Length: 156
Image 1 (cartoon, one colour):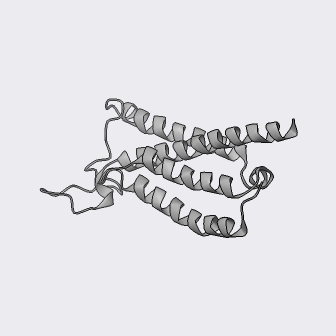
Image 2 (cartoon, rainbow, N blue to C red):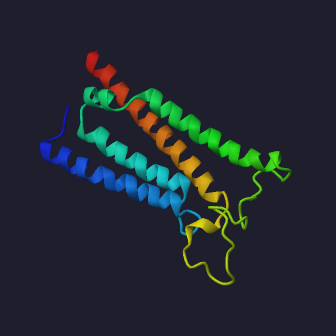
């Protein structure tokens, strides 16, 4: 069953803002409350709104479960790879070897409070991106499987 046109248009207009806000929470997780899990849950909430506004047949055409599986697996592999990278170069597991390295994510932090610069956390933003991607894919798959139960119930 589809919702009204007003609901569908509202969801279509609101979804990009939820995705942007979710990625904001993911990217600023090392500076503010939030992070990968919270941001991934915000983006998955946007997907839940799309699932509520459209019928299951429309959703099956819009969202591919294989893409979500690769998204979830890719996030997990990035997270594990970030942890193993320290072992490869001779540091402990999940050692923050990018911090203070002078690279894109490792600008040296000045003394005192951080003025809000994103590139001072080493590979913590990479871990947040990995977790956010995995949570987004995983929660969306859970929602799709729950919704597929409704389709089977309608056929009976």
